[in-house]
Image 1 (cartoon, rainbow over the protein chains, first blue to last red):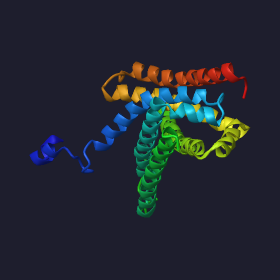
Image 2 (cartoon, chains in turn cyan, brown; image 1 turned 120 degrees about the horizontal axis):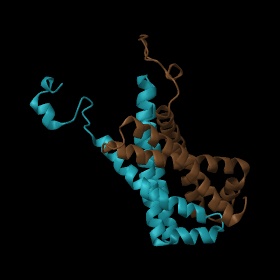
Image 3 (cartoon, each protein chain N blue to C red; image 1 turned 90 degrees about the vertical axis):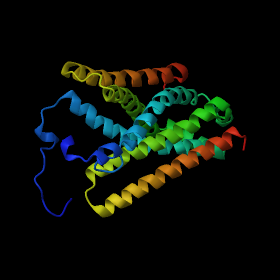
Image 4 (spheres, rainbow over the protein chains, first blue to last red; image 1 turned 180 degrees about the vertical axis):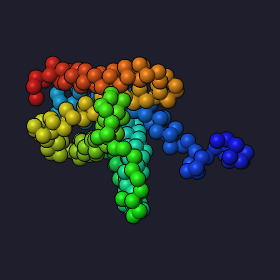
Length: 127
Length: 131
């Protein structure tokens, strides 16, 4: 196939979608982050049922937990947006719905990540 | 659907069952479920930030049978997506592509996810009894 590509196209390395491997790479980087953060997250959630509001609040307010929860929320919504984007690209075949869903998912994930970080900050900084 | 009807490729009911297709379908399905679950995690964080009343409401919901069902489902979805995600990352660097490895790793991710889920709920049960 490479004989059909111009040297400039190969040098740019952006492929037919003109986005290169950016989506692929960010999906993998957030996946690796979530792999590590996910293990911490399970450990954290397993401690919650034994705690009342004050206890849970104090646990998340610990700097290490607050940092990791903030990172987990951002990485989770970022990874979710990238994954849902591909699902919608694969199964939605009309331009209107494609546009509505792609923009809607991005806005919702950005809102979710921002609200999650704000909540963690409020808890960590003691309101 | 597109306005002009093009010939379609064979859909899932045509193929014989194999573990590779199960892991592929489940990876997408659990990914979508986890995206929805992340919104519930957000609800939990917002409740914790807003005070004891909201936290009490969300704790009660988590302990209700529908809450426990959702938590059980999400703990398995997280376990599966995590383990199959590791499989995908290893495949991305070129490991595990021989057919016997591919099949074995598919079973490892599937069965491993059930084991991991059982371990999580064993921890819950060991510490607090059955909800």
